[in-house]
Amino acid sequence: MLTRSRRRLAYLFTLAMGGILVTFAFVVYYFLVKERLRVFDQQLKDEAQSYVFEFQYVSEQGQYRVEYGGIPLETFADMVPKGLKYACWYDNLKRPLRINDDICPPQKLVKQGFQTIDFNQFSPNYQQDWLRQITAPIKNGNKQIGYIVVAKSLQPIQENLARSRFYLSLGVPTTLGLIGIVGWFLGGLAMQPTKRSYEQLQRFTADASHELRAPVAAILSNAQVGLLAPEDNSELPRQRLENIVDISKSMSALIGNLLFLARHEGRLNLKDLQTIEIVGLLKRLADEYQLIAEEKKLTIMTEFLSEKATLLADPDLLQQALKNLLDNACKYTPQHGMVKLKLFTQLRRISIQIIDSGVGIPTEDLPHIFERFYRVDTARTRSSGGFGLGLAIAQQIVQAHNGEITVQSKVGEGTIFQVCLPLKKV
Ligand code: ADP
Image 1 (cartoon, protein in one colour):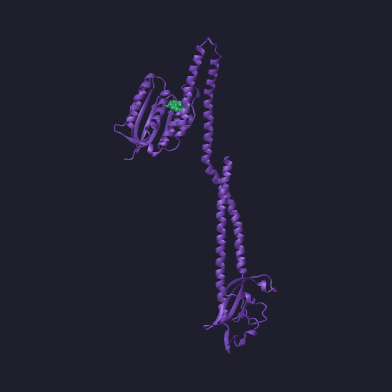
Image 2 (cartoon, rainbow, N blue to C red; image 1 turned 30 degrees about the vertical axis):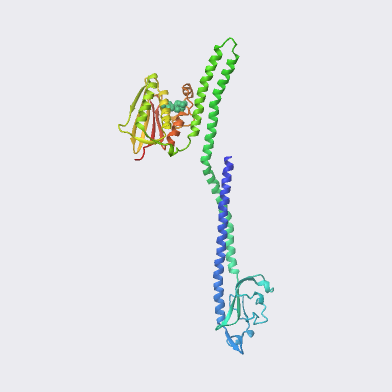
């Protein structure tokens, strides 16, 4: 599924970028043609002008005659300057002045301005050659006396443009190929977070199903054994029902934790945050745990700031995170041990430390303990009723408050969990 999405991403990227590239190539080519033609037309116009100036126009009984150094145009042999295809003269009614000129365009092609025409179209003796032609009126003073039509082969431009087309036709597919490769690579990068979440979700679902299967199986077997008891024996079913109640309670706690994790994913809404005084909150927590600690013969110690410190937080969630850490500290510290709650400030952040003198966590387990369902020693934690979700919940809450949770531990010596949270700006 992920590979299909990646391929799709790469395909769409290539399509979008390719579309832009091809459009861009067309626009560039269009402007190239336009610019080349503009320069070509300007040259043609200049050449036609200088050619026309070499002739004289002699008026004779109201008629004009074109001459070159006293020789009439009609008797002139080859007067086309180098580089031009033809230079033809027409009178005011667009009739050719040199009647047997098979090289000159017919009357219908004499249209004022620039034109692109095929030479072969009106001069079948010549092979196909695209020409650029200019038709300009000849004036003597204010009086128009005829037209001059001058044409030049477009071959140099065509060759030039053919070269440009060749480079474009090579460059565009090559660039498209490169875009495809980059798209595939970027698609992979873009899919990384999705892939991670997908794998996490898969692992989470598998772990959650696994954790729920065991208690369901236990409930079933307890119920079956209870049903098999003889009718006069009410003690056995009762025992089994009590077991079912215990298992159901633990299952309910697990489901509660799972729901909690699902509901509190992501950053907290600023509207839900309150200004809380953290020293007071920690004192109340310490008092609460004093009773639990006494039962386990643990000593609870505190070290707080003398002044008040405030931060923006959801008090219930924050308490839940700290309780998870305190529960663990009490759970994994043997009798006559010590649990300490410490608070200090550090560069506009407050640090809360939960220190215990308990069993500690092996170094190889430290990078994983915040993962959902991760338990250091399954036998040890299962006997204490843990599902491996307490630290994941604590971390999720702290991160939702824009904070950070870290751990240091040494087996046999104890563990320090540190929660850093931003202080409220004053
Ligand atoms: P659980 O609910 O099973 O305790 P947690 O997510 O709270 O799960 O903890 C994960 C693991 O980290 C536990 O299996 C436990 O072994 C270890 N752990 C957590 N806190 C402590 C601690 N204070 N001392 C020693 N081990 C701890």
